[in-house]
Length: 323
Image (spheres, rainbow, N blue to C red):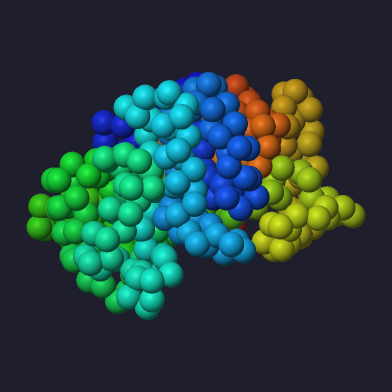
């Protein structure tokens, strides 16, 4: 497994990050344990979760994914220092209207709960899950800075921030000498490019911010399981339907050819496209089975030539993109 430095931090993370949104939702605890163990055995050391995972599932109060990771780590024998564990704060955890956001009070309460569920005394990467317009960014960053100084958090990151919000945060950290966001978790993949590439990419490149894309397979669309005349039953099919366009069906046809040439899967081609960009640190992969995990892991062995990447770029160019 290839390892990369996360932004300007001292964290060396695997080229693929294991996402755990499905733990306690579409993957029960025994299966989640097997996925975690198989991922680590394959060389993955980077695990991403969030405190709210997965409150939207019936019977799931939130925090379940963190609990599963904590129990697995204790039972697996994997040393804590051999893992890079990332989690997030922002969402409502069910304690009422004040039990959400990025206020100092909510952050300080939430980090203690996450530490307890994860059964650890520190979090490697603590991320703002999305912005909180009702809380001044200085208050949020001062809370994060205190957690870093206390040793409860090693580094901080942002997710779902617009370029201006990320720049505002970087400016605030610089002005007041506070811990800064060292990573960004954007929604980014072959069929959803402009949101990241228009402005965020330049900010991350200039300020050496690690990039950890989520939904690198576009909710399953880039696995190739959806076709013009085939829409299999899936809990995520609704989200993938936004990509059902003739242009994207043609893209899958193109990826089929490339995958056959490289003895790879469509999923592996989609992940390899991200890994071919030096700006990308570690795409977040999720798996509901060991077979899906194995397929995704195979992407690290797939190398796209500059010409092959350029062809995929052209096929998915967004309006206004510079040549």
